[in-house]
Length: 262
Image 1 (spheres, one colour):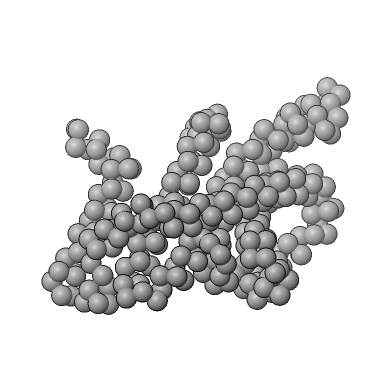
Image 2 (spheres, one colour):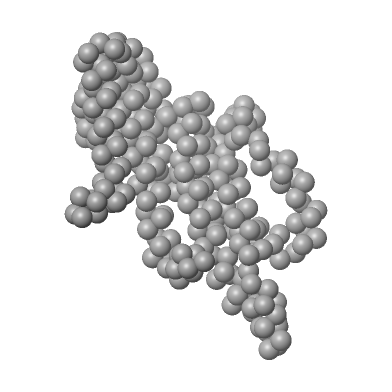
């Protein structure tokens, strides 16, 4: 019974999976199935990742990337959420702008780097702009879907008691849409981090995780640095996503309970 409960624990299963992958990669290197020259030993990579945790230059680059990520995500929420409510409450506006949105949404933000390089002389401004562009779509679309999911009976009930459009929006639409917005922000968070590092790596700049990868790319053990840095990028993404999930469950506990019942 205790063993089954432990296996049902998602964090424990994840840790066991990571440990299993580490053992497999270490074994393939030790036995010669994969040359350490082509792919470094897992123990070597983890050792370098541990060293990076105390590297002042690397930590400053991490702070720079996270600063751009946070600012870009904040601007995304300030732009996408109001835009989603406007389009969701004005059907004619959504109908008129939907073709434009569907045209722009599939364009990869990284494909716009050449255009952004021509438009922005400052690398930081360019990075923030591309982050906002890429992260806007999940927040905007989730806001629209959330508004469409609002119970029409609840809105009609408030209108029948004399409440105006703004009161209906504040008392019904906004609370019902908030969990969808939160999910969109969580998805946008991962996208923003990916775009931030990618722009730093492809367009350069003065600091950031991507810039750090460029700088260590010419070192003799560049592959070790690259994989170790990728591990830290994955850890950062996992931590931020977990924090957003925890916040969603705490703030919108009522919505989670309703979903489980349904």
